[in-house]
Image (cartoon, rainbow, N blue to C red; front, side, top):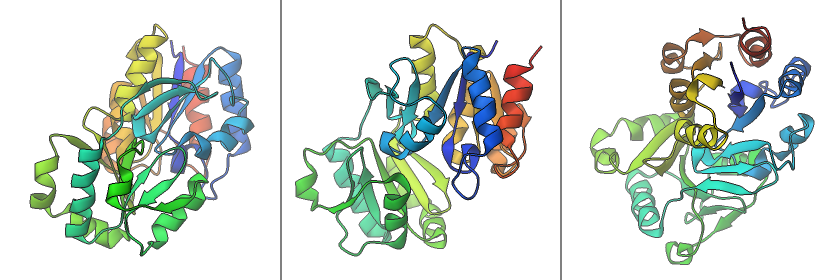
Length: 272
């Protein structure tokens, strides 16, 4: 029986207009009324999720949960940290230097700021700041020593990221220690190797006394793949990339045609 529904936000929970569809709200409310924990799993910080949690009636709760920064933080929706694993300063120096070699914009994101050592702010950095509702702050690498770093982001035009990611030699020395996840065409996110949405979801399930068989996960992008693979019921959006569809047991409608609502109704509310 499904006890946790883990849902990615961008292009999954939200429509292309970055809104919650009425059918999605209705289905999630029906699930929570049955005692199912609906857990938003995102690369965003908590502040970038709060408006949606409020619309779903899940905000500021001690027994409702959210996974942020692609799994680097597991917390209650009231903000109590249950598990957290961040990059350290030595990691930052290496990853930031890699960005300079590849001529990419790089930033660190936490609950307070987007930090960048590049004075030439890219358009996608500004977009991310607007999307997650946190300010951009310029800091030199030396000034980053005491900053909490849940995740880093290589953030640039899709064609620039495509070209950089194809440079296998450049990334190879880092693959054993870091997790690189393409969360959108213009975001390449990086965390500690052990950090991903799937491992975070496993930690939460264990704390709640549940198993993977009790979990349904819904997503569309590469950073959702780990939780789709972990969950007993993995659901790919109709707009998901091929690797997510291949890993999932089910494919639902896309994010502009109530895909999340359809999956919840069929597999959680009306499951035999």
